Image (cartoon, rainbow over the protein chains, first blue to last red):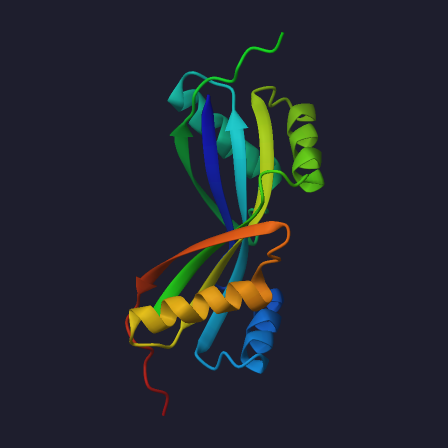
Length: 89
Length: 89
């Protein structure tokens, strides 16, 4: 059992209107030191595989097929081994 | 100049309907090994401070006042020192 910590971020050249809005809100709230904001997604996905290579391959495909939009987004992830889930009775 | 890498996640006891939807989509796409999905936000905020303690305090306040909803969300962040921005002429 592995847990994937996936970061999905807009490519650096893509505009981030949500980030621009948050930045201007921060400045209006008095955070004059805020300078640039980029907003992405963070996903925790548990993958039921005992083999790290298989888990890695699965997560890569999940990102390519569903989780990220490859046209405008980049993704990266780390895998962390987890204790197996308890058997349910 | 510091860059804060902020993770905002739902508290473990809070339902994540978006995660449930993504999990069922993954399973329908053939990822039978996907087991649990939790979705959060990932923000990169540049903070124009030379002092790490001040930057840390600012980012904590940003999270408490605007970025996270303390009732249902947790936040954590790391600060990374960045080269100062180039002077604009």
